[in-house]
Image (cartoon, one colour):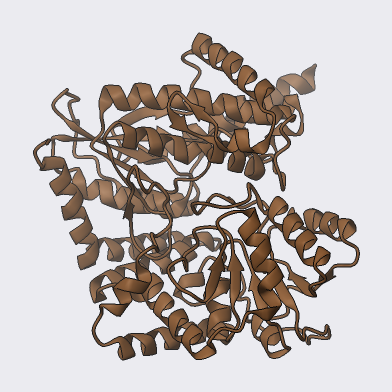
Length: 539
């Protein structure tokens, strides 16, 4: 009994420590403070909604943007608190309750306090408990939906109150269960559908009542991000996403709500440009950094380059098709028109097709897959004992020089890399290379199977593939004016440094770096654009 009392006595201290900002968070907090005295809330104020992302990069970036907008007393900044699902929360009912009622609460306290230095109040939260009867009703609705699901297609096409959510529910289950594929009978799927119902109700209530002019979000995938984005667009808000690595921000729309960069017109736009030779030369110079084992601007998210050679290749690659695996727990719907609901079904279909048609192939794991992928990879090896797996340490250049004839991916960046090296690729989604010919893109499973069967016989023009690869690289990564390029590179460096902030004194350096970003001309141009949206007359 005494020990229990002692633990309870220490609980407030532990909670304070849990909620206390780290050195890095505190340093950035001091840099982004945007309070302009006591602001009186009124119906005439125009509102910007900011996603309360638990990430130093977005915290600093959103803080600097909002601090720049705050001098206008007609603007009110509100938080969207998105935390709901947590990885591994479904291990047990006790674990689920612990995460939802304890961990989520504590993290929300910490991060809403941090965002409060430039936000006026919380707009709405994905995990509030203010409407227990409405939540219970949504649970009943979710249970009915879940029980009626007979196949994956029904899940993909799931719509709740006019909002398409099937892809978001599918990807959220995969990421947070975590699991390589969705089990329609798993009760956690019902809980994700329940969360989707609750999020749609809360989002519709908020956006229809408050009608924010701007909504800043990190990503547009998963239930937590995607539902708010889609409801906001339906209600007429201007939505800007900051989740891709090619630009500061992308404005989303009802016809394009993915945070990934729109690639559909890359090829035709490049052909209308002047000085194409210079542009190809700059692309080749940048791409060569990656192909020689470095991390270029487009792959700063990777821990290690796929071209960093550390192992001698002993497997025979001559005449083989190489299948490049994805991270099984990443979002399979990060791009439009993905033929398969997840990377597990994709690889099962791919291997079965290749084996049934006697096509020799090798499988290469993703070079930056998370630890959970090891178990899934072992399951794949047990299911296909005759399949040949090549070490992830073997570089793609080694595979090409060894005699590989074709690459297979769902939508990976490997496509333009292999094209530059003279190897065609087969894909099955609206990937970034969609407007170029070096990648055969299937629109359904039948087309995908036909493409795989023809893989060993593809004989493309290697010189043309190389040119198109460089055109793609330029359009995707370098098609920015000098000021935008300067801002993009500074943001990439800041993002990388935020992810590696571990040593004492780093916080002040991050704050200084953020201050320098806010002073860049392109950053100021973006702020002026958002300020104009606030003050533009409503049409």
